[in-house]
View (cartoon, rainbow, N blue to C red):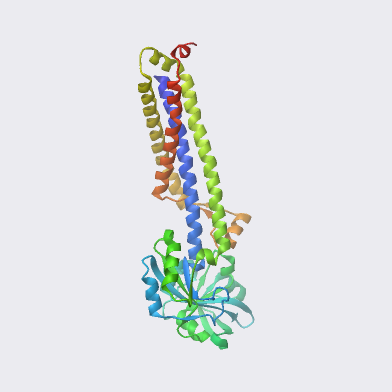
Length: 395
């Protein structure tokens, strides 16, 4: 009896460690993938953007379109569109008494922009814009370069719509910090009406940034919008606008599948090794049972039920133990440093390795390991049907 308990404990432990590894690894994969996508959306671009046809290839103020309620209503008629943020984007020269630098100027509707890119959460000092504010938000790197502080005044000089002179004098209301070094050293935000007035582009926009209810149907949503809108507009996903970032995410995802493949091989060998050892140790016992008249079909059923019990016990125990581990790694993710962190920051991602607590991960990995355990439990069944009682009883 002690031997039976020992064998069961060994098999259960193998499944337990298998499911623990599978759940934690899968949580990391989903967590990292979700984090990358979230950073892309919160980074700047959103999931989908609508421009005037040709704007993305030649991003100048002459390629703007009129802000029409009818167009917005068409876009919002798609069930997967959650919100729209209008923008007017251009470049200008920011100047103080003694310094000048080129910067990205973005006119936004503050509340609607925050719904999509969570711009308000990037405020490190000062306060966020209100709809009637004549002030600006400036990125931390640009402020350092221009040697300006909160509530200082800067001047913007540039070329407006159809070659008009664009000038403006604004007070700094808040400072932003982005994960992307490029955005952090050149970004400046102001209210959309202020930007339209400065650039002489009244009621003109360069883009609609769209937020989706479900990203799983993003491609179908884009196709629907392209059919819905006129040929004067182009609809682009973040993958089309940022192909280098998309390729980086796909490469990371593919590498995780390779890790999973190796992990499942280790899981199979771990479970099979314990089953193999169990059959070798129980050879005499099984031979005795068959010799005294127990049918092999009943003995096989007994072994399958035993394997089923140990595998389910191991899966449940592994999931229960992995829950606090995964939750801890979600709220306290592994943070990269050094060159690896710089690489992530160059893509605009926060250099962390988080986990995900999505319930489907635990269910999916539990089912996979359960199926692997049950498939491997066919080995004892096969050995029973090929068992020779006389040879088994020989020591």
